Length: 333
Figure 1 (cartoon, rainbow, N blue to C red):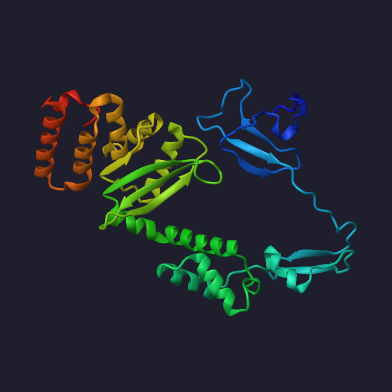
Figure 2: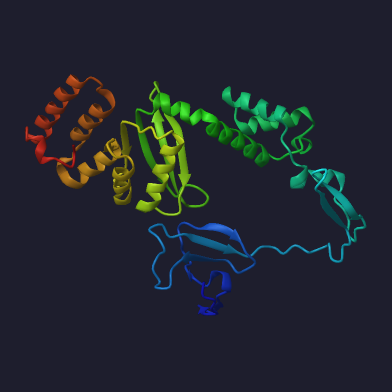
């Protein structure tokens, strides 16, 4: 990184953000806490071009400074490994402090004192299976002890605890089991910048017997390039014991299409119905009317039998395109 002291509209650029360009009206801006004036910056390279197809905008805010009250504190502890006993021994301890310690009623704000017990976590897990909101479970547990301030943890700690449990379940085989049951057709869906980090969220989804989505895996990526998708697809297959799904649906991103053919070789690949509709708008223009979309939606979501599908397909081509051959609409098939 080049360290510079350029002036931006009268504001001195500071070293950690020397490669950031001043941008006052960024639509997507994540917040980081730095003791600097509030501005938006977009990450750029030396040629003033975006680093990737997904430039990141960060908002720099000035935060209130907290006074340091531990100056000259002599409290310390020294440990030494006892190799014969295989544990550490305290060989020096100084307990004198030069500042006030936390009061007992404030200890719950310290990270080291906040803990969700296994029993409390299981209560919330059971309640969530009974369609009770996590917030409601948190408030109910608080009522039992005279208020949520007496629980010994915050709501965010409870969310983190349940997230950890879910991650362990995914690692211990839940996703692998779901993939073996519902992995005959998967969808690789990219949800763009709806998370706090404004990163592409890539999810592998299956479909159960009730036509509901089943999460098989996912990742937050820094950009949407072919090498990144290659790595993601290879890692996903490795987690699923290199078993490839017979069918995969994606969007029509160029980098993703290239990666699918590299990693999922031999797998039937097609676009999802939404992108089929977008292709129709692009290629048909005014002919992509409501009658066509009604027929297309009916075919995709309502017709299961192969013979019925072919019959309805021919009817759609006859009604909407005067019976022109399918070969003239390669973008559709």
